[in-house]
Length: 260
Image (cartoon, rainbow, N blue to C red; front, side, top):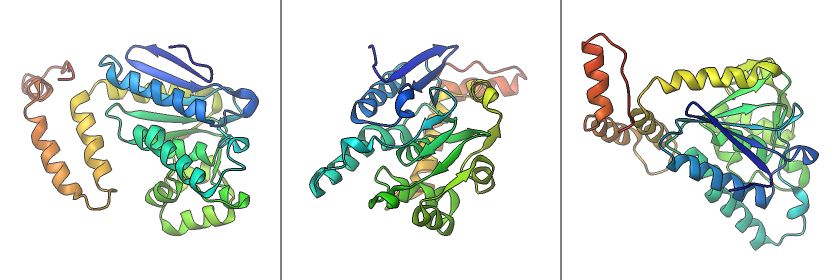
């Protein structure tokens, strides 16, 4: 499929999705969210895709926010529908993917941009990145999961301050509070993320997908994360990857995982 607002490239089982709206600082609009959903879904169904890196075009912005012009005149019902559809199509969808997703945060990640980065399984930031949830300065609140994921990642107090002040934090501050895993020079961002992806490729895709499921379960109301871990742990024993991994260990050789 040809996309208008994103670019998709793939090499050695690592796919890179680039949000490509440079004149809008890669802001999310309805079409971009739909295209991202399609791209993530297509890559998820492709067994040869083992890791996905998500980034934005240029050095200025990962995603500078949502496209405000699209919803400035929405009604109460339309606003709620916008948030519900966005969460289902993209933000929750990405979080639940079995394929690991790394956010390569280059430049501004504001509003929906930070929410999208937080939906990814972890984040790496360029040293010029700035992050924030400025929605209350527009008379609204984060609607794509920001009020839920930010406290999970950095704690309730810090999240409350970021949301209430509508302020931005630097990449170094984001690293200090645990919002990003690494901070690297802008020019090295994608190479660094690809290096992490290559390390992931050495491991069992089946085990990784079960690990994602188990970790996510801890943050869902009414779900016992320990029970999910036990079930996921048990499922691994029925896979060819488990047989290969344990056999390779005992034979003192490198495992060759097939993902089944």
